Image 1 (tube, rainbow, N blue to C red):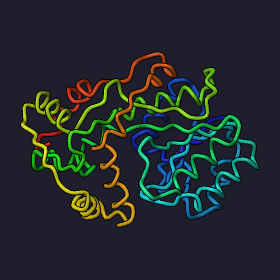
Image 2: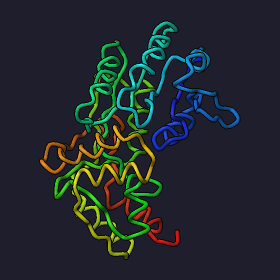
Image 3: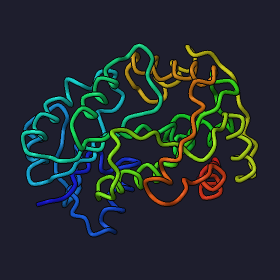
Image 4: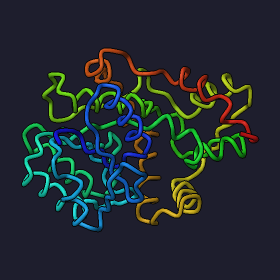
Length: 279
C-alpha cells in the first residue's frame, strides 16, 4: 500500500492526525504497542515489528520513544529500515524545547533532517498539558493550582490538533520543502496568563505556586513514574522559560495549513468543564 504509517497513532497528535488523513482519503496504517483491531503492532524495542509496520508505506509520522533522554539507539534501526524500503517522507515530532544536557533528541532530529524529503516538526508546549492526565492538568482539576519554576516566563503554547494539521499538510505533499518547522500558538503566554484564562473560562480560581526546579522534577517523577533522568531534564526546561529563551512565536501553522492556530482562550472555552473536580 502507498500511504502513511502513524506511530503513536493513539496519542495526542497521532490520533488527531489519523482522523485528518482519513478525512482526506489518505490510506493510513496505525501503529501501537497494543493495537486495536485494524492497527499494527509496533514496539521500539522489537525491530521485527519495524519492518512489518513499514512494509508498503511511503510516508511516516514518527513519534519517538516517550520519556527517553537518548532515543537514537531505539530509533536508528527503524530509520535505517525506512531508508532501505524507500520511505520518501518522514515527519518527526520533535520539540522546540530542548532538554538540557541531553544530546540524544538533537541527534535524532539532525539524523532525520539530513535525509532529503524528511522533516522535523518542533512544537512548543502542548495546550493539552493543562488537561488530565498530564500532571499540570491533574493538579488544576484536583487542587486548583499550577506548580511551576518558570516564573513569569512565556511559552508559545500550541494545541496538539494544530500540530496534527501541520503534519497532515506535510504528509499529503502540499508543496512544503523545508527540513524543519517551529510550531507555536498565536501568542506566548506565562503560566499566570494561562491560569487567568482558565479561571475566566471555567469559573474556578486557579492559582500559580512558584517552586524550585528540584521540586518540579520530584513532582513529575512522583506523578508519572517517569525515569529520574528524564524528570530532571524536563523540569530544567523551565529555567529557559523563566529566562525568556522559549518566548517564540511562529507563523508555521498558518503557512502550512492555511488557517491560524487555535488561541489558548479558545482551547480553554472548549475544555472548561474538564477543570471541575467532579469531571
